[in-house]
Image (cartoon, one colour):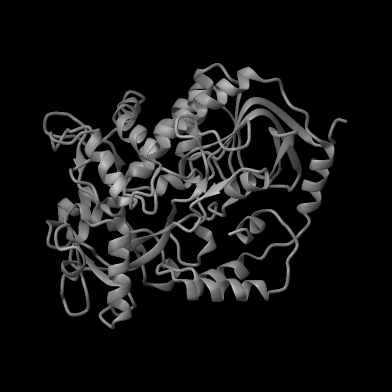
Length: 480
């Protein structure tokens, strides 16, 4: 039976137009597949643009001793050896080539004196490894991939939210969603689907994530029968804005510390000496976030409940050149000149290490025809991600997922869009949401420091809450 919905058909459907989605789409197109790209917002507005520090790749342009083996070891150590080692190996080996590819496509990186891509220090990395464009690397990455994809001829469907994956038997057949502008339903028929929807940050009130990060992709995959992995591993970036209240949680890039910024408490002490005397401010994010949390909890926090991050000992012109976004962000949002005084910073929900369980080489989930890449996929980062590894992650595994999805699409015939599943998806759309309920429950019970007592009380509180009907985006969050 032909469904009474607007329908589009492709070989490969990519859900999410951030770095992972765009890179997957480019690769699938290169393999000759008909590719559709769906995004909740406008093309070029994905959360990837907020990745500021750089792309981690062992190119050895600044520190000649750096190589993929050291990058691999740093990634495994940062993830507490809970990583998928094969993903970490592939990532470390292939990241330099993916960066060179971006450069060939037009990305404009900062340069060394001899014209090579400049690399900066970052937390948890043994050597200066992050290829960067000031503190706007994610924006340049998206611009480059977007230009490349549009040039190749990707079919883009903007302001469209997918609420259900449709299956034909055990394998993927398509997706159901709606146009955000007018609410009309739409279906997509596809032989394979790549989930590249990012993380879950909006489950927390204080987060660096954009409004799109509502766990859509992970819940879509889970409801379609895919396995999820490591969902307890949520990263709190140590430095988000804490004042004024309206900007609380907005990211303060790790590049500030990479360029020499220091952390101090209300006594003027560089407190990282107590927590990691060797790496200090360039320790891994989990260590720095817990250090700030401890200082505040023990009464040594800043006036608004954070810590002081200071880069003002560097020349003003150097700060404005290396950290232009941070300079304007604090000047415009907090009336603070970071070239003359410290910033107030504190932990903010930033990244989800867990997600859809995938095969390392292909990004294939446990559901035939369903792939995942980027933050939506689990395994690479273990229990804690190193700064800069997210951008190289989405390049390496976006390419691999796009290639595998195209290969899979060549091997199968189009599946049927089951009308009963479509009608059930439509009924689900009439339910109401409860995002505020989820946020209020997570904040006190699933924060930066987790223990069995707090998680248990949060679960009990949730269990006693009135049961809500299933719905689209807010239902995604209710699964967490």
